[in-house]
Image (cartoon, rainbow over all chains, first blue to last red; front, side, top):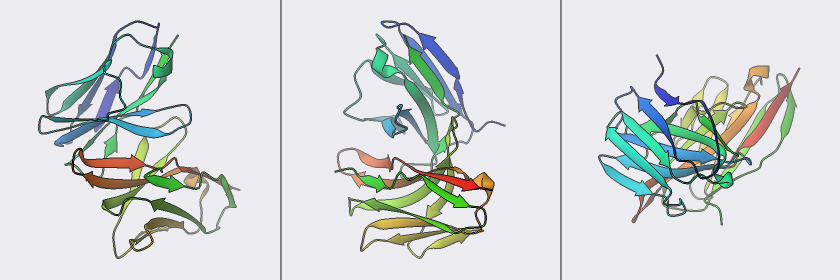
Length: 112
Length: 113
């Protein structure tokens, strides 16, 4: 059983398009996150979502928006994709803020 | 200044060797600490939490030094399967943003037969 799952695994799209990445966790966790890992392998948090409270990393462009239909899902929607958005996006969940996080397999986004 | 700093390596060690990684953090408000490992083209996976008194899990030992603001990971009797990137993670509570995880850039380890 996959604890944290993401779809799609690979996403290739053109500049200017809008795309979404889905994330689901079956761990019963209260908190979910989105991270971006760039070509230099640096992992940077984009959003955390805990008890309906969204905490946004101020450096994230507002073209990125998380959407949580329920506690087990946190989707990432990206508008007007740019070349610099190419990266691996990881979803993660944890029992609460400050606790260990469990990561999904990642979505490799390539913008052409 | 980065919240978390690690030596990127690479560390190339023979099988059976003992290897240690250090990681420094800049914010004294850091509350919890972890080591993750990440294999090539895979997601980060929790290796172990780091407790104030130090803790051990098999061949792996983690230490925390709050006074000097660093954590360490010691791997004894290295196996080929230990080859990976090891990420130091620090959880910091900031008043305006709550708890946030900060990842180091990772230390690359290759265990050589």
